[in-house]
Amino acid sequence: MKLKYIFTLPLFFSTVACSDDSPQTPDTSGQPDNSINVEKTVTIDAGQSFQTLTGFGASDCWAPAFVGKSWITNRDKISELLFSSEIQSGQPKGIGLSMWRMNLGGGSAEQGEASGIEDKSRRAESYLTDDLTLDWTRCKGQRYFLQRAKEFGCQSIVLFSNTPPVQYTSNGKGFSNSGGISNLKDERYTDFARYMSDVAKYYVNEGYPVTHISPVNEPQYKWDSGQEGSGWTNDEVARLIRELDTAITSAGLSIDIL
Image (cartoon, rainbow, N blue to C red; front, top):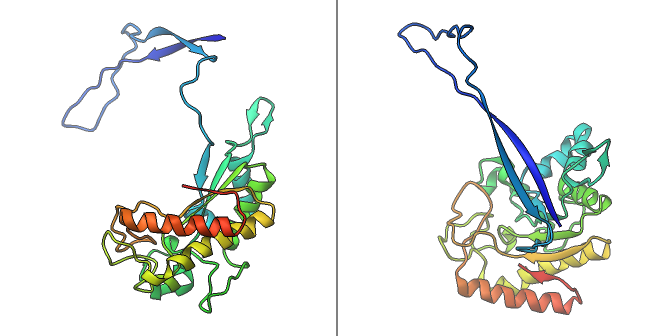
């Protein structure tokens, strides 16, 4: 099937007068109208595919954590704009996101000023506590948007990590001073992988469509300040992926690794 659309694009040309004085609008009342119409024909072949998109998504880094927790009067409308696929009187009520990336924060928010991250909006909560148990009451703002994504029928939840939890990092921070290598303690690879798998399993059991885990974010960058993050070498990424695959399999989850 071929669809044909004709677009009429008005092009406007104007003369601008410049002087040493303040700008003046020229008098063009006696001049001819120089605007012209250009007609373009665009043909779309709906039967020809060039690629397949897995989904249309966005991330909850960073503002949704604060909006969902504190901006009570506006968060419902904002989440509708993000997730609704409903058409009302010919107008969409939202952009209909089909994928939602949820940040598995490193715990710099719990550290506060001691986190070393000056911008509060670049700190993030973690489910992992200092006694290495999981507190599911944390990340309230993120959990709000996750719930709304589920209510609106979002098809895919992607859990992603900028940094391992601060309890597992070499410097005890959510950012790294190790340059392009991992800030994860060498003895904590299995623990970090199991943590991500445990969070995924919890939400799967709660009825959320968790389809992917992305354990590493922008590994080539030196995350030495400003926000949570860690560098990773290729060998370190490969090691973590193998550990995560083992953890996911042991948990009986059907989840892909990004």
